[in-house]
Image (cartoon, rainbow, N blue to C red; front, side, top):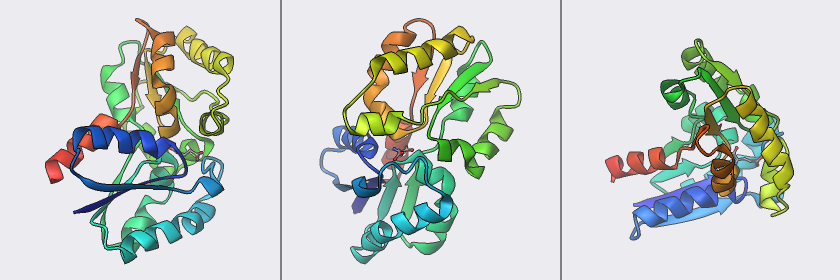
Length: 211
Ligand code: DGL
């Protein structure tokens, strides 16, 4: 069984590492498109063009499963990718449903790229699970590049998180895999005030079920 993990940059690497920690003998490779990162400000057509060569290559090499460890790609072009490729595709998705189930204050924050926040998949998730809760979407547009370049502006992140906490939010959804790298910092800021959730465990459970 050949498994691939794909992202624009190092976000997917955190998902890849989490999978590796759980399945040490798996034949799994990580590929990313650092040259064209960030994906978070790209249009649907641009994403289709950028992702195509990577997915063509997965197909040419007979991969069985590809995990899209990129919310921007999976919320924007998943349907097109599923139509064009034979291998099984497992996407990460913004955890709006999970957040809606655990919030007590009925206020959650979704940290994501601009393209994810505009995507039809994300809008559908909000419509389905966000009717009775307040969903905050703080401006995180610079975060993925900051994390990719290892030039993290901690003050900016602190003030973004503090502002959603001050608005009463008690769940923070990390809906961009790059943000997994600062999950512990965000958890420290949120200590006792909000839960921080991201999809690695869900992906691992899905793989466990399949393997
Ligand atoms: N890590 C990606 C995501 O989950 C994309 C970040 C970017 O390239 O802007 O959305």
